[in-house]
Image (cartoon, rainbow over all chains, first blue to last red; front, side):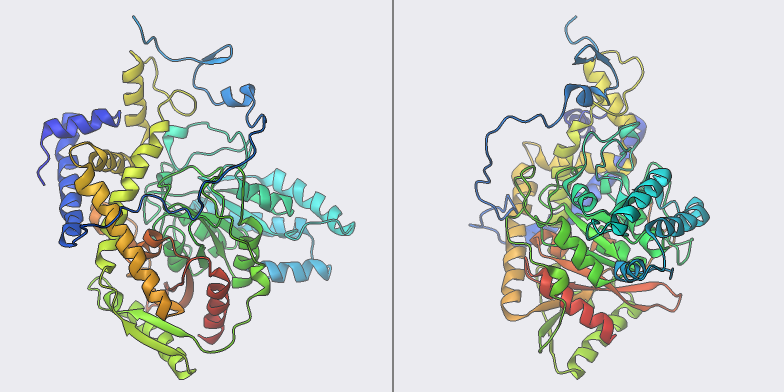
Length: 95
Length: 475
């Protein structure tokens, strides 16, 4: 598996991370090495095998639809890096 | 008070009036004050609060109204929420975060009058095998401070190892309770996937994450498990399976069928002394009349790659919530929203977390989703099925917990692949959702602890604990 710079930057963008040019080489090397190792799974024939997507033993776990207050607004906002009134505050989205 | 007492011993002392809960807390605080600067096992100590609570519980004991865990002192891994107490997940990105509620497992301990003494250091977001990935510095092994304690729940393991609390809670996604238990000469239990509610646990990989218990005795592990396991309306994945009174089911009787896995004993990564210790337990079991066979588990070598594909994929999704909007760290004067996300996450996450998010995003990206992520989910089913087949024949599987004993600090930090191999023998149970425990069985020639891992079929913790107690008494 060869990962080019464009792919690396695309992945970083999807993950909302910044990968500057000086770290690209190391990241490319690490990921290529790990991917080469996990390619081992291709030795196994998995045709017709259903992917295992959930490990829970529960089926349709339901509960009462009742109104509670699990987290008050005041508590919910307590850890906010920036807030105004009852809102979380972020930089302008629309110019 | 004896060092490294089990809760049973403490309870006997309390019942006989030899000491009080306040004495117990003071005993642990003394050890913390003496040793924590060097070991770095605790990030925060709730000193006054623990003392105040101990005094309250002493009153309750006098009034005969105390819960069943009165006198038990607990350390919590820094990924478990405890209301109004700090939580960082070993990361800079949760700077100044305080939990808004307590995890269900914490609530259940508190309801039985356990005392929480502090918050244990760990690898950032539980990603690591040596506790060198914490933003708050590495944890050191109390048996030799140039060695790692294992990870990711290393601080929790060292806290029990060095007599700073009676038990501690960690989390095990691919071995993060069992491997540090093995390195630190304590017992580490990973129950069946979904046995314990994860409400209030900061998620890493949701189809793997399991809360686990560090203790000095099997009795304690059993008692804590029966207290914290079971249904919880806040976690739709938790099992509704009945939780038996494990602590009353520890008598072991009869003969069992035990399997060794050829692929673990023949692994080139396995240290010779560890191998000998594990094999000698098998020999003893044979001498006692149990059936012990070497069997093959051909899919063993595929467990670790499967684990890394699926956990990084799940981590990339779970960790998307750390974006600087609602809590934690945010960069100064962001230019716009997207730049705020990116710069906050880039500065907030450490190297290993960054790398795993990149890998997870890659295996989930449209072009590679089927080749990696779906492929690994298919292999996961094969591994789970193969293990279930094995448990139709055998009661238990014995294997080394880790390929080696605790290694030197810094020995594996430059090569992620090398570090990943520390989980070589623990990921199998995690991939299959099976319960497993690490118990200390020997020391190597450097005096470092060797752990034996015992695994069994899902929801058979009662048998796992009884057999482990028997093994510890027989060794």
